[in-house]
Image 1 (cartoon, each protein chain N blue to C red):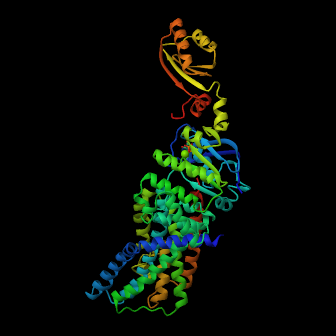
Image 2 (cartoon, rainbow over the protein chains, first blue to last red):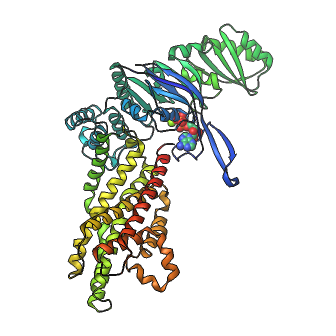
Image 3 (cartoon, rainbow over the protein chains, first blue to last red):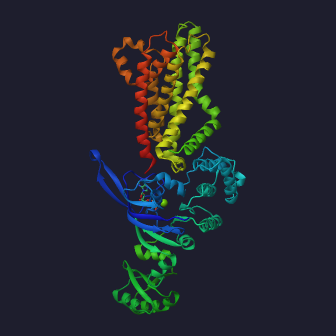
Length: 339
Length: 255
Ligand SMILES: Nc1ncnc2c1ncn2[C@@H]1O[C@H](COP(=O)(O)OP(=O)(O)O)[C@@H](O)[C@H]1O
Ligand SMILES: [Mg+2]
């Protein structure tokens, strides 16, 4: 039976400095005086998030680097201690009931953490053994997964020399060894070639069809759009939007985004742009730029250009984007996902 | 507690040890055996050391091998896996409490140290023949050996969760080397009678009780600390170091 995930007012403040692999971008740094007057940096990674991930859905956590995606996954998978708030996998509190939670979950971490002392096959069979699979069951399952993930030809080699993509595939295979009910994938397609990415998407969809809940983080909006039933957009440790990709895209006024740059714009020009048919919202960006959210894209350009000429503001650059999660993120935060 | 998972974790460590057996063997025994050869054979044959020194040296060499093995076996993988490769994460997701993984590491390290200690005896005996040692009291000997092995593995846990990757060299030169030289390994504690202050200070070094205790059970003809007292102190130190190590491990295991 599929099970869901519940998150209530989850907060996480790191007091140590981040490990070299975690990037410190876009999170608030507060200097607090530590013992003996030394200053210890506190990083608020999660500012109190609440979410309900339904049983059997593919749920996406979308956000830029440092938004708190890995921290959320870390807490849900018992690897990070929450500072405040609670979370449950099914009925099990992730902090109070760790062993029960671990039986239910499979985890593909952002950074591969394969056991370098073992061969690819051993990584799978020992993982199965940790979860109590019988010797015959784990051998059979390992062989099947090695085949499915196209690692069979190197199954009995040590993984130290594997390419990034192979390590990533093996990581996913390992997470599936014990047939988890909830599967967490933290940026699984980062560093995968397009072909392997499609393979990954197929595997995720197949696994979901077997009644499994899947939580996937990504900063790639196409991936979220293509794969997820629902998406939460995270920024600075907060949920800034939640819904199906379609509903989220429909929630942006207009959906089309025109990014304009003038030599210099005037309040009068902005007011005239706002009055054009189909324009929902005009947002000035410093003294030369403007973002227009509108129901139509290319057909607006001639009208915008003639308004600019009439107002004496030379139009220097135009960029049109179709309705997308990227636009949504920009709309909510004023920043691009790729920043 | 989940025995199947615990057994699987242990099996994984055993598997890795078996794979690296030759390297581990050389790493563990080359240095002590060279020491035994030079001091127990060359120096004795040439008359610079009395033949009795051979029996005095052997328990100390056994203690060194065990301490080195246990610390190496537990601390080195922990340091690397926590700070660099994060390999341990997979085992931290196994359905068992985090502290049990630490306990498993300690158990695996203890077994390795026991094997090291018990292999040194016949090897050294081969090099030193004839040497005046005997296991005339098996139970005290077994107890001491076990306590020393546990000390090394618990110490490995505590060090492995406290030392940074870039400080491993410092750990060996600032912690282990002084412990070995001031650990009554190459001389009995009574040899320090002429240095009364030093004789008191070295008592903080748990290796003193390890060497003296093993000496008391293997070569009791030499002056040594009472075996029971040495065992009691070691038991206390083992528990203390284990508690400290577990505490550090639990903090390190989650962020
Ligand atoms: N172990 C850690 N110690 C200290 N700070 C951390 C640690 N892990 C993450 N952070 C910080 O917390 C914030 C959120 O990080 P993370 O959850 O990794 O974001 P994301 O996965 O969305 O990129 C970042 O500012 C990051 O630097
Ligand atoms: Mg991340």
